[in-house]
Amino acid sequence: QVQLVESGGGSVQPGGSLRLSCTVTGATIGRFCMAWFRQPPGKQRERVARITKDDIETYSDSAKGRFTISTDANSNTLFLQMDNLRPEDSAMYSCAADSPGPMTECRPGLRSEVEYDYWGRGTQVTVTV
Image (cartoon, rainbow, N blue to C red; front, side, top):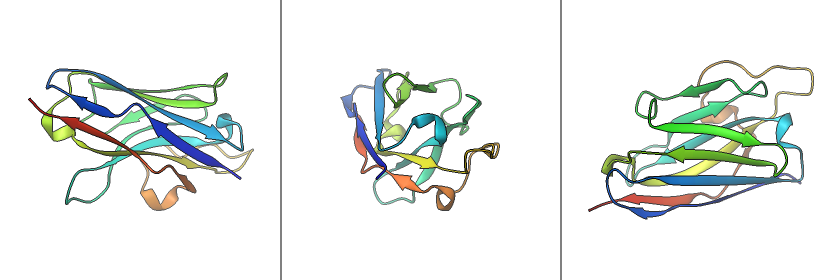
């Protein structure tokens, strides 16, 4: 049974940094195309970043240049390093895993949330003075 558990959220001031983690259990992270999504209060879920099985990274326009997505095979963990945070980055951040199959490459670009097979419950990020 595949499970994703996020951690690392919290409250920071504008300009600050946070590092989110998403630990995968029940399968090797290298099987998946991994992504981070976020849902601000009262708004729809939006795509943030995605990393393929070949470590190709894709970012939303708002995340580009400030956020970095990465994985660590040893700990089976997905990360999102977030720097220069802004109040509009405040949201519930969730990780997601897309399992295309062992012989299938990840599709390029940010993908719709409907393409993901597994989701974590989320970790809250609040950016405020």
